[in-house]
Amino acid sequence: MRRLHRPPCPNPDALRTNYKHPENKNALLKASYGKCMYCESHVAHIYFGDVEHIRPKAEGKYPHLEFEWTNLGYCCARCNNAKKDQYDEMCSLIDPYTEDPSTHLLAFGTTVRHRAGSERGAITIATIELNRPELIERRAVRLNQLQHALDACYRTKSIAIREVLLTALEEEGNIDKEFSMFAAALIEANQRK
Image (cartoon, rainbow, N blue to C red; front, top):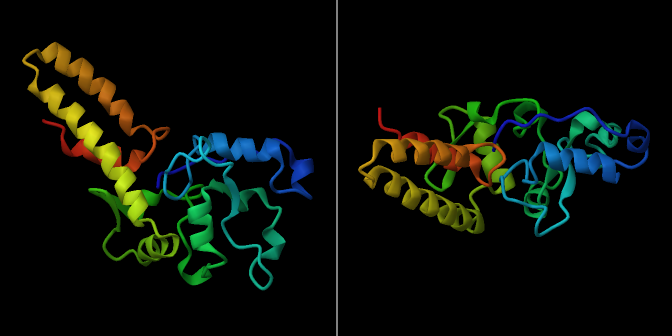
């Protein structure tokens, strides 16, 4: 999970009655680079994606926030369904639009771990099922590809070629890439000083 920046609502008039309005949904999709705001899986190429309520709109929860732009994000159906209407104000799930998830979460190989002492990190991982087997498998494929590329970079005898390749590989940890939190951690761990 990476820090995201929600743009201003492109169509506030539509938001008053339709939180899923195409213009607004597209703005959230672009803000998350087509990835789920929680698990970082690319969503748009295999699924329409969901406009998710960070604080649930369910009766008895936060129905007054149903059409509130600051309560909306873009996510995959798996994370949305796992989250359901769970939300505890005293130990809320991490909101990647209002805070930096790295203060609570870290990439450890193919799994997400909570930082020591972060209840919110632990609750977020468990509630949204951020270590479900399918995600771990997809992350492993991505990290294996990166590891092979890193190995090739460090095997070359040419320092100039190595620098060019490493610069290109660093981009694989950019926020717009799938599982960028994991890719960035692997790339950083392999940097030689």
